[in-house]
Length: 184
Ligand code: CO
Figure: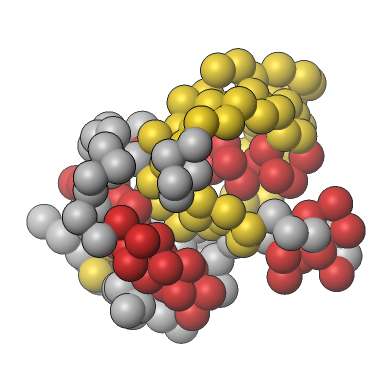
């Protein structure tokens, strides 16, 4: 099943999401639906709050970008109950977008390395270190579970300039190639 994407203006995008247990009902279906929704919407990452669920899961799939960057080959996975242990390395700027913020693209500075602990779909625990684009995608999706959007991380001047666009999204004045929805 493909879910509509919950967009800016929905209070649930601002909540800290809750951890889940292995008993979470129909977890495998939810994960597969999240991959389907991400694919249809042309995203490289999708967090559960973006489909209206305030739980700590995100999926990533950067394999379409692997043509230009072979290090991204096979980077398609699910992170359950993730916890960022440490961010390190020098900050670098990269232009980000987000399915919940259609038509907005802004440069965001983030540390280049991230160490993360998470469970996979069988609730095996992993602790891994990522850098470059992989780290970037993880940091962006992790932010969603903390109620943070990438536009929170741009410079104060850019923020001011974005205000009108953000207000339009919150009023439903938005064009996207996928189904969107505001949950009040
Ligand atoms: Co996003």
